[in-house]
Length: 137
Image 1 (cartoon, helix red, strand yellow):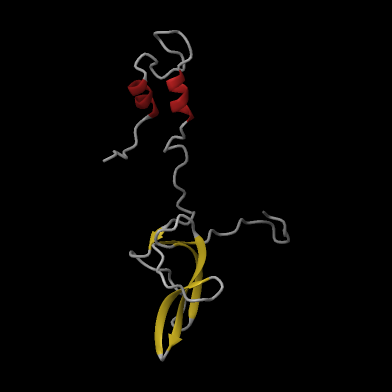
Image 2: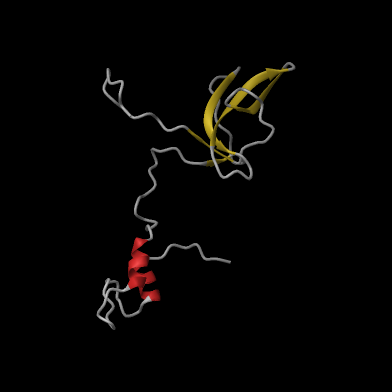
């Protein structure tokens, strides 16, 4: 079973080449160390911290999107279906069906989806521009 704990880049360099001590020049050979170059080319896990202002993925088993109001309503979100490797826009709606209020998932073209997504997230907020700025992207 793989260990997915994060390690420091300097520890990885030491594990692969004990002679480099975190520099790009091998202490034993006095030449550029290829192992260190490869390790330094891997993006670090701590380079960009998670921004709490950006939408995050939520498991549908934890909770579904909140639909405003108490009668018919819907919200459009980004969702991932079981077994998919891509995300897509979907609608989560509350509707009156045979005299009962139900909440259900629909495709963006307004057809009922047979599967429940495993993950969802709200769309990110659009960038802020000037009041009359129509070309903000």
